[in-house]
Image (cartoon, rainbow, N blue to C red; front, side, top):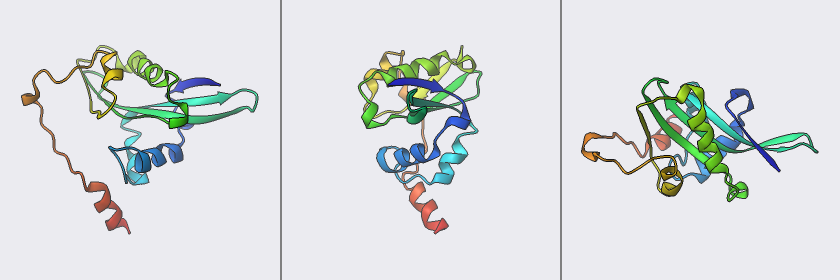
Length: 152
């Protein structure tokens, strides 16, 4: 099996991305499909694809999204590799593609949030916050359930 990484938005499989984020992720469980769609144009999206040349098919097996102003700041979000394709170095290849992207060069600050992939991100220079007292957040843990109720 060969794997390729692309930023071509036409290749993204919204069904795969939404299913993983809404049903399997710990950070976006319950996210409405519409919210996922709205996040794409404001981001550089990276898809990881399993390519089968014999069957002439491709399947999306991973994803990452970078929210950025393309000048000084980037936030890495929604990174995943489907479970059947883990353990093949794809997360590392995905992050290498992110950091090699021409629109993401010479940025002053990169941030991300993770509960379980610290080892991966440390390989790319991420550390714990040096001055956590300088950063603040406004987090609404129930927003997706409220959106779904108001749409229903």
